Figure 1 (cartoon, rainbow, N blue to C red):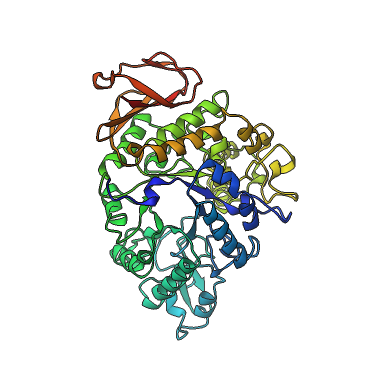
Figure 2: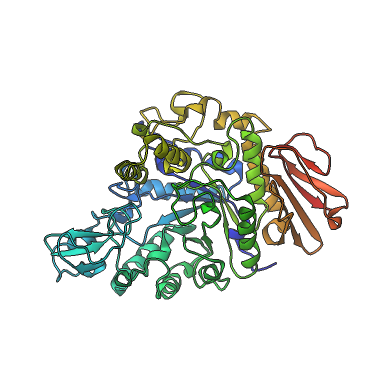
Amino acid sequence: MENNKWWKETVVYQIYPRSFQDTNGDGIGDLKGIISRLDYLAELGIGAIWLSPVCKSPQDDNGYDISDYQDIDPMFGSLEDIELLINESKKRNIRIVMDLVLNHSSDEHPWFLEAKKGKDNPYYDYYVWRDGVEGTPPNDLRSCFGGSAWEWVPELGQYYLHLFSVRQPDLNWDNPKVRQEIYDMINWWMDKGVGGFRLDVIDLIAKEPDRKITANGPKLHTYIQELSRETFQKGDLLTVGETWGATPEIAKLYSNPDGSEFSMVFQFEHIMLDEQEGKGKWDLAPLDFLKLKQVLSKWQTELKGEAWNSLFWNNHDLPRIVSRWGNDGEYRVESAKMLATLLHGMQGTPYIYQGEELGMTNVRYPLEDFRDIELLNLYKERIESGYAHEEIMESIYAKGRDNARTPMQWDASEHAGFTAGQPWIRVNPNYTEINAAGELENPDSIFHYYKKLIRLRKEYNVIVYGEYKLLFPEDRELFGYIRTLGETTLLVLCNFYGNNVSFEMPEELAGEKELLISNYSDEASGGSLRPYEARMYLLK
């Protein structure tokens, strides 16, 4: 088997702690809440939990602005709580993957508070400073959250760089002291027993702002290899880099099987297919289905044996997939299961985002009920540019990050069983119909379907290690592919839309088949699929 690793054979579950489970009634999820739900996750069958940031933070960008990398934000609990979470998870064969934000810190981090005191301060060079005149930034680099990426500091008469919020100053990776501080911190977490790390916007750390290079800077892989040598390679960890600019060629560097960088990458090419060409995610376009097949297949075939991919439809930055590319009305259950089948039959490590296994949907709130800094900035900018309120809201309903951040829907009690207090963000009103309690009771539920997909990955090596081949590349409704390993062939057939679809089975697949899983309880005739129907077969 090619380079067997536990992280190739497992399924990861992402938790957004603020919205998962609250235990103290303040309306914000906490670490004790996660501990209280570990048995639920163990039943699902996942092998790792990726925890969105829980370190100390002023929460300007929901924890992606860290003021102390070696402490837990009191909102979530304490260091004792995270140690308990690591140990309790271990008992259930679940590892904890921490979110590392290494491109920038919070402006309340002691390093930055020191840096602002003067150019002779030992921490000054931990950040990226440039001369300039107030009101005239060093250049026109833009922040990902809108506006200039440069902020004036009158006491120094200089600008600092922030590729995200003004309260997230970029760290200076060219300074070996910064790198050493980071390695010491990571090793400290490794000593606590964490099972891995997800690295936030890691492809930005080698920026060269004077040349307007932000992603994939010339020293990027030198830095990552040093980081890996000094930390990750000392343990058997799952490490995944968030790399928006990755191509398959670059991904082969990031996740080289020799272990010199990361285990795998998050790449987002498939996720950007429903936006207007050359524009951003808010400029909506219908999904190009043939392009989706082509992109997913490209990542399957080009990384084969040379790198490892992550498989995901959802995360804390993305809308709910069943609302986005499924059908969250009449065919919510079927389309949620279909999308899961399509993804979980592929090669790579699947990630499930909290609530995905329940078929949780997007929300359509009035503007005042949304909380996300990115979305609120967008609204302000677009209103000023003359867009109509209704048009902006449609973009927000489709793509806003708060779609993924509404509280986990545990049961039909008030606030969906998430909190006894007032939730920090409104619960999706459909929680009375869509919730974990109901899903667990119903053997035909989306939850039990995910549970079965996870079990199949453990039972059949072909799902983890098999070769991939796309079928019906020109079909505009059917996504079919085969996976082969030695004598074993797996066939996956998915009707991506709401029509009945008929197809000709290729000759080499005409033999006897065992149906491993399907999202309809009865098997339809061989050459047709009902709306959103999915089937996975083992060929005899």
